[in-house]
Length: 193
Image (tube, rainbow, N blue to C red; front, side, top):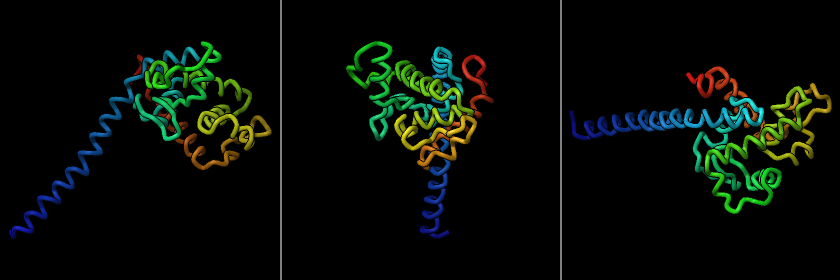
């Protein structure tokens, strides 16, 4: 076998190994992070009367379970909480504003604020058949867009997903609903499988 051919085979083998190993490494890291916050998710979700599978699905979509991540629009942490949502939470629950938004990188604080914000949206749309769809639209695009763009159906049994005019918000909602079903099947907290 010629030297160039040996070099080619060696480089090709390295490329194949890297193509398999690198994604496998990220998958293993994701699977470790995915279960890391289950107990905290269950406790926080129960305190706010929200399905823990839904909260976990939001976290998966927002941050892939990376606690110290910053979003491109200034969001913080696991649930990608915005400073506006954090200040609303402080105003209603504690009075004042956050002195340092970096506190939102702390998983327990982030989950508390994010779950509270999601629960508030769920309560607002509780009379609608697609309550979760509208609440997720609000969580993703803000309450102003839901109202201004008329994403809530005129009939409370109507199809909200069809009304959402932002393609990225539609994909966001579909992803979370798919993840929620996945987590409902797997269990959380002490029932983890």
